[in-house]
Image 1 (cartoon, rainbow, N blue to C red):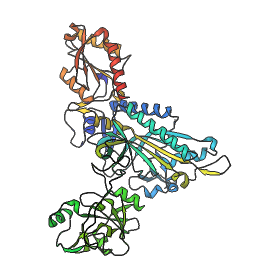
Image 2 (cartoon, rainbow, N blue to C red):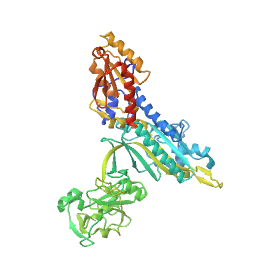
Image 3 (cartoon, rainbow, N blue to C red):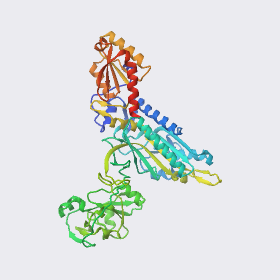
Image 4 (cartoon, one colour):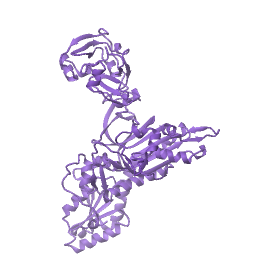
Length: 573
């Protein structure tokens, strides 16, 4: 592609509404155009990147025996009502009615539709297994879309679904998809981790997220320093063996603490560390019942673990609701509680021999309380968020916390959807059985954005070769003033474009402008043609990732570029 004919328009200044690197660079580099909040047009450069990611996905999915199909973006409400998600999914589901008053939604995911398709086509065990996927535009009405392609409302997603006869067969399919996903992100040239994760609104018993490692990542990952264990902080298990020698009176002592309602104020009042205190977090469940969680003062409650343990959605409790339940906000504690309050206690409380906690009485706390006295008041469990130095649940080594960007998620769905939607088959004995399902998603645009978050410098994007919009950019120096340089660059473009993906910057611009744009756009290899280089029968070759520059003879250029492209592709894979 000749730059002079391309739809590439770069900008010098960072957009004021772009908060993260990938958003800034994709707008500045002419990759995206904002159409509405969280909705973007993919301009030609971005489209080329996205199509490369999609091609890798298709190759690896088909390698593992999956077939591609395409489902509608507009989905009927009755399928979602059948699965029970029409009202459960929440305001992120964009609902609307057609001219006949029938309810529809813009599909954020397609479990219901694919289950309906398969249940109509599968009747016997002889038809299983089946593994189907699509690459399609989705819509989720995020309350605060931000970060460009990282958290948009409309996005391109690869979603796949598997159907097996039993759990053993489903486990083999899950392993195949895990393997395919590792190959996909490896081939995209990304540093990533597959981490154990919570299944969220999709559901299921087990899942893995694929996280591109980046300092700007929204998600925390607990990763073992010795073994392969890694988990999202929502899922990570704290395997610390808390030990203490209980001392003091089990019932504790009542202490007057007027105006002391926060952990910081409490630590200052008793001249102690946060780790010696008990922190309280109050929730209400879907039945409007109050649920209290208690943890050591220097640690944090994990809401996802709490919901999983309680078996229901939880939301922060208001001051009014706490007072209505007979509780005293600011002085909540795990003893002296009124009836009807569910209590959960984090295992970290076992590390204390004398607790300081709220007395459930205005202006009073309890000191010197034995943690053993709490067991009869609530359930001890791992409900806290792990921190660096906590023990790995597999090998007991120390965990470290790193940041990541979720680009893929695979789920062991089991029979959630097949049961609610009656997706059955006849086994060898003619008995009706439920299909066992799996679900596998990749954010295509998000993968491209995550690649930039991981691969950039002060000048711009540094694309991995496998997903760069072009492999080589040719920059001609002063072509309007030097006919020989223009002709040589033209000839080189014609020759190389039959072998490689080439962007030819033939604009009548200063060399510095061309170099700045090529670095901003992030093309891996730059070939500079000038009167000076031609006098040596050479060109100047620049490696974008390392900044290395050297003269390369023209007669060996084609083979050398092919070798560089191949080597960078292999480094990524």
